[in-house]
Image 1 (tube, rainbow, N blue to C red):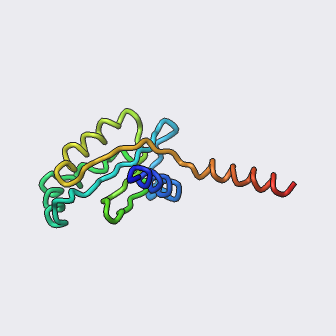
Image 2: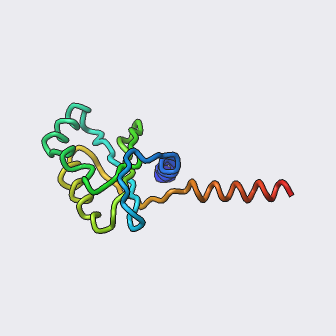
Image 3: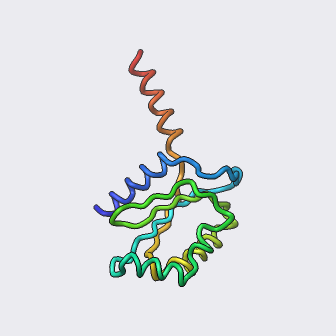
Length: 131
């Protein structure tokens, strides 16, 4: 059940997100959603201390990535959707491995923008209902 709720949150957040930067990565870029789940056995001060020790914010997000959305999900942690080229995926992974571990448990999900699909589906439904 928890996985279903997380999946629904991913869909909701990624379909309502707007680009926060103007960096264009081109058609060969992919979107990936990163869950930075707080270590439940640590206080916020301990998590922040670990982030600083690991220099997380110097590495994440990588310069090659564009932030599409960044949310704090209460009770979970942070949910970050990035756009990155496949050749830079290793850089993203290393930024998490070196910077986030010890402060967060992490999960990665390939992501895509569902808004155009949803709009097309609604337009087709409206046309069908008007006939």
